[in-house]
Length: 279
Image (cartoon, rainbow, N blue to C red):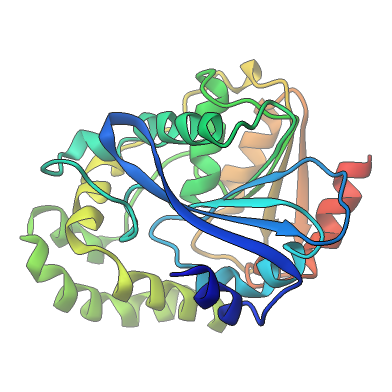
């Protein structure tokens, strides 16, 4: 999307919007949107990593408000359609370490030091934890929505592993009724439906193959940054058990409970973030 298209999506917030591709690792180029509020702002910038194949539409309510108050760098990871790919896609290109290396390169190009707050959801949250643990990512703090300690895909997605990528579209349509049944929040289902139907299908396949047996390494005690793990009781796709275990393993971790997954995508969650940062 162009800056004008992003501004229209967000309802023309009072900020400057820049869109560009930035060189990441291994020759990949990631799409980055930078939002700079027009009013003076002294808070550390936010590095925003949306979830697996996530599209900006689902984050529009949060971004529209937050971008008027704080500098935000919204980075779309390499499995998304916006990434520029230099070569034939391989499974190893989509492992968690590759994502972390990408983010390290991008924040360096943005001239961001450790005085940042990371914000991520689902796969984006897991990448941030993985990158911090491996020493690739630095930051004062991170607010993470439903990170996964492991990725175990549902039964309906198993055929995606072996099927040719061009079969994904009908298979996704078959799987959507299951997803609707599994998710208790209508807004969450709408976001996932939009995400899956707009995904780059070959990258989706490679990402599923790369992460189907992923487990977050156990040595989270190496992360000394202030970390909030945000969970919603009504979120049946990202289990609270994972999040509680992650908090227990972090030296400086906190559990933030919110009413719903949809709430975490809207402007109201900014109050929770500000309250946590001020403690």
